[in-house]
Length: 442
Image 1: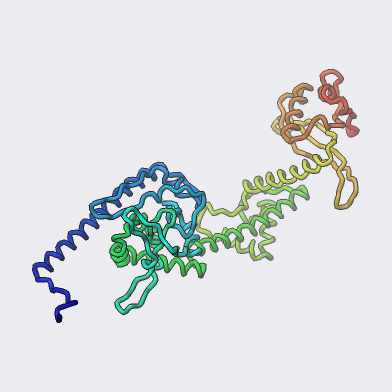
Image 2: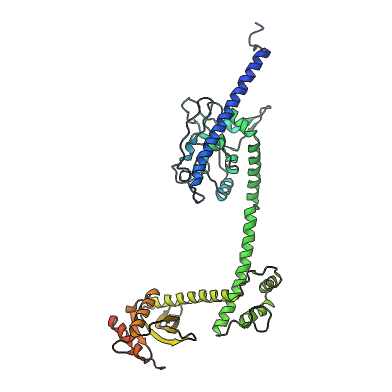
């Protein structure tokens, strides 16, 4: 009776044989894992060859539609679930790693870490073909003293009945069983034990903890770069704002912008640079900007004080003003035009376009007679027919209906007021209500 319940002790040869079998099984397990990894790498190379830029919320199905499911290995019993690469859902489930895209960009990675995926707990997990299933006991690691520690990195995918290492899937590009999805429930305990003691998992866990802490404190590298970018953007916005006001002032006063010199702090550098220098004496933003321009060692430093930026800002202001004028015209509908041509210094005919209409000012509730200059346009054909085609196309380009024209006024030139082939007659032929009145100034 004393021998009942006692376990027979193995001999040295039996222990050695048992160790050899265990090492052989472990070696086959690792070889199978490397084969599966190489297979997945070859598939991922096919995908990357045709890879296109996608949004952070692009589903895994769109990125991995060319992958084929892998047949599970029967020799070692290791099953890598590659069906996770075929996702039919349209949205990403933060708690289901199988729905995450294979290529996780930085924005999606940070979003996943901030949302902190939750471990799925079910009363009854689905069984596989061999009748085995996942258990929430795998979420905990039992120490030798009986204490249980939560494996926060382990996530179960309900859609594909597999488990993932959350940390390694986010922080590493290396493909392993737990980053691709594993549903080998028979050997899962051993797979998890080997994985969580591996060097790669320990490094990824450290990276995950550091990144999560940085995101909470908003002190990641991206956040620091974003703050520097916002500071720089605010500085240049203030500089350009002052330049725009100077350009508006000179334009209102009909003053020349440039002089014979383009350099700062010279006597003949023009009104624009002189105003910049004057404002720099009292304004800290412009003073700092001038100091940076003068002390910079770079020859091609961006300073926004040259003639090209002046012309560009003038053009932008012109477009905004013209847009506002056309909005008032469209609300008024009916209008008249005043046209004239004059040659410039290069002997090119410049066509002057002025519109006149009655505008209802709703803020003051009064009717206002508005007259606005829409610009100079170069013309090559100055006959009545040529001018008619030009003005018709130009009005159409500005989305102005020529049939709403109610008055036209030109000089006494034959090509303008001619009764047979003049511009006014050509317009009257298509719009009889556009009455012609000779320009009183002529």
